Length: 284
Image (spheres, rainbow, N blue to C red):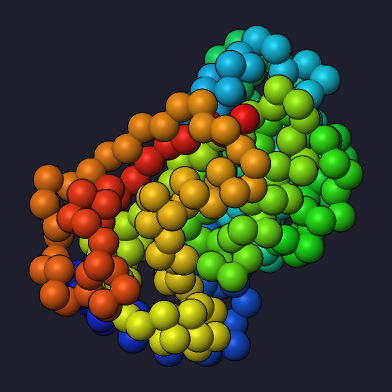
């Protein structure tokens, strides 16, 4: 039975079991069972990068700038793309998830050159470290601790693509505060946020109590989202010192599951709040 055919509870059960098998992330990645985004795909990475740069108002003016990507996941493509526009990238994640197939980055360079973007040549790079050095980029893999080690006011643009919902709930406020510290005056923090359950695109993650969902057993099993809803996330941005420049929301017309199936914590929210399933926001 393919993964897409599994019901939400079957996906949770499967990942609870599979995540305990002592295989490295690279194997699960190749099997397609655990994935951290699609930033190892050239067309997707280019589209994501351009979207956030455009939202920040930085198209055509990236030379000499520093860009932080939160949660690059399976790919280091932002390092190559930023370098092609004269910018430096700092990629920050909670673990070393990046695809180490250097051929992907050679292909990315060829794709960019074919589209009129003067990309570096990575054909002589034999290691990921050599690739990152060629880009003038850094790849940090200790999450919040990595952010804390960076100097204040270092970044012109920070962006994330379907990442903020995965930041541990207990670390969210501190992560936002660090991003505010790292952003230069006049810089932008651009985010695309997916509030769906990541188990099939519904709200099944809201069925569980906070104690169960935030437990190490659940949170370390490959399906965790912090379940911070739209208004609470906006409040967290404000508390960190950000001003909202633009925000766009996308909502279901009606709740995808009956409200009485949710944990009481979420049942107390309005239907309109629960129906917001994704949004984009630019913070200054």
